[in-house]
Structure formats: structure tokens, C-alpha cells
Length: 161
Image 1 (spheres, one colour):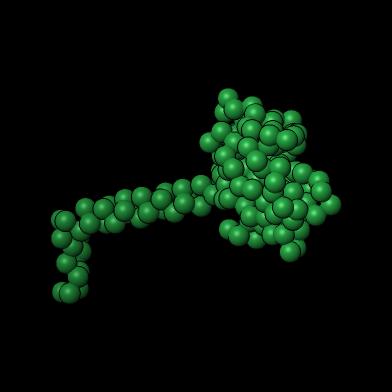
Image 2 (cartoon, one colour; image 1 turned 120 degrees about the vertical axis):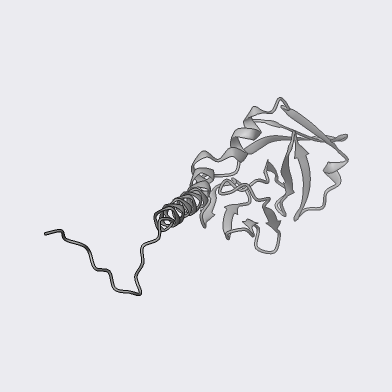
């Protein structure tokens, strides 16, 4: 006696159905990999800190900012130190500080807020100390890199410390 499988009349297995399922599973796998990569990239950027690695790889060791000694107290001068942005701050107590202007979280450019006497990253709310570059709050994992500052009559010399 042979057994035949009796399928209901409305379910008919077509030969192309298996190919359609395989195509769907392959597309779902590709979408899953893309989603995983999209989640992994910010984690990589956070841990690798490429902004800091790029800064150390440059050959620039000193920058002279002509007439920067005329910068009023309580203000900032943004400048390039090699390929990266940096800032020179003339504090109200007449101290001078220079540091990188690249957030150590995801590489956004930070701003000096004179009224609050702090450095702020608008991307994710990171806050740094305006005198030391130390990370005070938010997601930044490391402090900003400080430079040596020498003020003279011709300008301000900023060099790697």
C-alpha cells in the first residue's frame, strides 16, 4: 500500500518556494551583519580614539601664532596644530593654556565657553577643565592633550609638551 501525502487544496508546494526562502534568509543575514557593523563602529571609535592617534602621527612639533599675545583675557584663539584644530586660551587670571580642540570621545571639535570657564563638546555633552584639559563629565574617556605655551613680544609659541 503506498502512502501519498494529501495536502489541502489551498497549499501547493511550488519548486521555487525553497529558493524564495533561501533568498529571504540570505537577505536577513546580510541585514543582520550590516546592523552589527553599524553598532560596532561607534564602539571601535570610542576605544581606538583615532583623533588622538592622528595627532601623535603628525610631524608638527611647534607653531608660532603671530600677534596672539594681544588676545584679550577671557578669550580663545582657535588654530591648526598640524592637521588638527587646537585652541589657545588666555584666562582672566592672565594664564595661557593651549590644547587640542578634538574631543577624545568621537573626534568632534570642542569649544571654549568663557562665561562658564569650561571646554564643551556639543556632540555628546562632554565637558573638560579649561586649565588642565581633564575630562570633567560626559562620555570622553581621556583628557585633551596639553601643549607648552611661551608668550613673547612677537607672538605665542605653542609646542608639544
